[in-house]
Amino acid sequence: MRTFITPVKIVTGPGSLKCLTNEIVNFNISKVMIFADPGVIKAGMLDSLAAILKDLHVDYMVYSDIQPEPPLSVGDRAVQAIRESQAELIIGIGGGSCLDIAKAAAVLCMNEGSVADYLNLTGTKKLIHKGIPKILIPTTSGTGAEVTDIAVFSLDKTKDVLTHPYLLADIALVDPELTFSLPPKISAATGIDALTHAVEAVISVNASPLTDTLALEAIRRISSSLRTAVWHGTNRTARAEMSYGSLLAGMSFYNAGVSGVHALAYPLGGLFKISHGESNAVLLPYVFDYIWPACLDKMQLLAKSFGIPTSGLSKREMAILTVTAFKEMVLDVGLPTSLQDYGIQRDDLQRLADEAIKQTRLLARSPMPFTVQDIVRVYNNAWEAKLTHEGERFY
Image 1: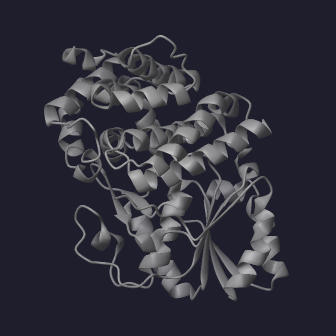
Image 2: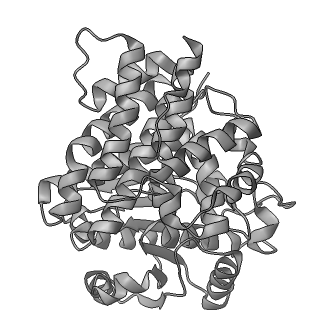
């Protein structure tokens, strides 16, 4: 049996930010706290939102103490800010880290304790109260944070998450027009993040026909539009395809789960402060180079959604071509494909593996089991930027 969960309402389409007027009226509130990335504020993206609130005579304050890959202290300050504000509604607008902080703070402000008390791996408290309503508005096409109940925080050596249905948005609003100003590097990193969500959802042991349908459509849209979105950022069609692809990937992976790529990526962010999207990108080909023999039927589906010609090919050949296509995509959007490019030394690989193996929640969803030695081997291939077709050992 499989269950499928989404936010209460999803609003999509170019110009959909204008729909907020009716949505805010329906909440019947008088005070709002807006969580916004400093970059979002600088780009003037709050102007339309502020105008809507002013027209409705709703008081608002802007909270911008937000940073990428946020540590626990950033989350705790956000929680305290809401507790002191008496806000009745939270609106998060920005990238994945901003949305994660907004939804975590919206829930924890009505519960005792700090962010650390509720972490997945080490937390000891359980959420009791749902918190206050929240509207989440992504300005990137990648994280899927607007449709998940996950908030990711950086620790000293790795990352951990809050995860609970209370963190789900009351409204997720996805307007492709908000992504037009993204620079190429952020477009690339967030786009590969969305792709990773979709492909890991497909091969997850918790996948279902519904999550597969969403994820495969996400892959089709992302693989055909990411290069254009990165290098021709004002292309409306490519940006819209990426927004919808990211949304579909988010809905899919939230229900099916991600696995090996994310498990190995978390220590890169924790130990070396590499962004989440780039961490996924540099590992995606090499993790799949290891796991493909355990999911040949799913690799065939990935190949077809990725647009790889499959006529006359065996499942094994399709799998290898798909792994190669992943690496080519990362290269084509201008991201590194070697851990060496991030200053990581070969001596660091064992330390990374020792942290990655702790991500049991993620690794449990992989169709291929991982030992510490397996993880070291994958990191080594990523360090050398070498596809070895590890699965050949099964033939």
